[in-house]
Image 1 (spheres, rainbow, N blue to C red):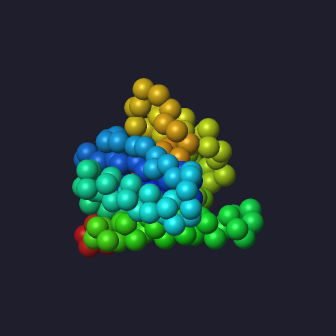
Image 2 (tube, helix red, strand yellow):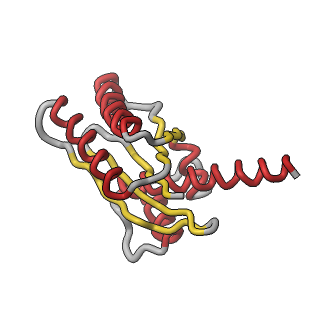
Length: 165
């Protein structure tokens, strides 16, 4: 199974792709769709187009997106919601099954602590995936989201097998 993780942002949307290799995660790719200039409509289009291109290039089977529930002010919350919407439309338009996880769920699944900082997430992602360098904060968050989905799907699968036995 190939999982695309997405960390939505109005200026930087992180993406990370991992494969499930027999219960072990394998790094495929990561990066950031940058949309820092232009009108909000132009920035949203860049997010949509960038994620559409990522999906076409890497052909994930499923997508995991960070569910945002906190913003420092109403304007930031609105912009983040719009960016998240552009990402979701790109992913849904590609026919992907989309799963959503809170930051707390993602950090607990990857770092073991729900309130880990970005540096801790970057460090653990590097260690878990055997990367030669730390990914950017946005890409690390997206990879963490993808790993969270792998952990969740493996856990649900093993519970289902145990119940059916």
